[in-house]
Image (cartoon, rainbow, N blue to C red; front, side):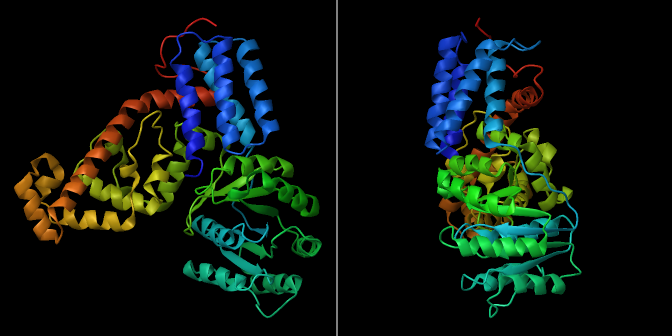
Amino acid sequence: MGLDNLSNSLKDAMKKLAGKTVIDRAAVDELVRDLQRALLSADVNVKLVMQLSQSIKSRALDEDLPKGMNVREHVLRIVYQELVNLVGKEAEFSLRPQKILMAGLQGSGKTTTTGKLCRYFQRKGLKVGAIGADNFRPGAYAQLETLCKKINVPCYGDPNEKDAVKITRDGLAALKDVEVIIVDTAGRHALEDDLIEEIMQINDLLKPDHRWLVIDAALGQAAREQAKRFHEAIGIDGVIVTKMDGTAKGGGAMSAVSETESGIVFIGNGETIEDLERFDANGFISRLLGMGDLKALVEKAEEAIKPEDVDVNAMLRGKFTLNDMYKQLEAVQKMGPLKQVLSMLPLGGLNVPSEALDGTADRMKRFRIIMDSMTPQELDDPSLINTSRMTRVAKGSGSSVDEVRELIKYYKMMQKTLKGFRGNRMAMNKMMKQMSKGGGDLGGMGPMGPM
């Protein structure tokens, strides 16, 4: 789902290169072909793919080998750097009082993203307010107001007023005491002159610090025309790509950002108000290549988890009992879907079973109820749980023996996953340092052959 296919294809291409005994022109050509197939399947623009291919080829074959680096490490680093260049730089902004104008067509997720942005700034300690200036789509203001009420953020709008500029002006007066004002503007089903004229007028009145374009990842390369038109009208300085969790065309939408000459500021990858992630090009490519994104993981953990909630160091050392799993399931649930959290860990080529990623709230709740019926000794040493103990636990928790077995099976998969992570951890940490700084080694990638 989403960019999973691209990620798997990129990782396969890198693994194939890492497994070769000789890195010569033929090996580089094969790597480039694999990368081309992966990127074109993700709807990345053909011209950009060809430019990336040529750059990788010329650098891999012509650049001098950096000191302390062998051929394979050098080529892998080049691929990483060129993929980072492909998705572009991240747009810059700071956590200070500011006004933000949201632009985009109807259906892009603009109103939902406005609510998510309110939550983002709120969690950073700023007083936020929203203005619902979308007077075109019925129910737009009601939707924004509902989102804002959930997080106790003030929201101004007037569903009976047809003048979006007046709504914005009145909203600025009503929200004069907040630090960050985010204005949700109207969209259309297609780019129309009246839409562009309206947003230009709002832009002139608001004089925003940022003008962010919201585009649906499912549009792929079709987002290019939107980005170009809005940029010409108001000068887009950041793009938010939504619905990245549900389409294989995300590569096309992200590459379309080049039309704005700015960069990506956030990525929307879920349906809840918490599912908005600050874009970091290095972290994004690291995740696609299976090297994780520890910076994003730490930020998410700091926002969602108290230190006493989970012993991260114990988990990284490989200590993992049912008692640990109980605490960690509760903590991870606060951070978002388990699949998303694990993608931030440097798991390398580790294959995480799909069953281990099925961390739905209902399932986790049922598991916790079952664990509540276990003794402290059983929670600390799950190997004690034999058939008779399973029967007792099932009876005490109001569940079936099969459900208890399912819990034990899930626990064993998670334990195996963490053991695999422990084994990959040192090598992947070295790899990430290598990719970003260009020194050291790639942590035991194997002996290198001559170019």
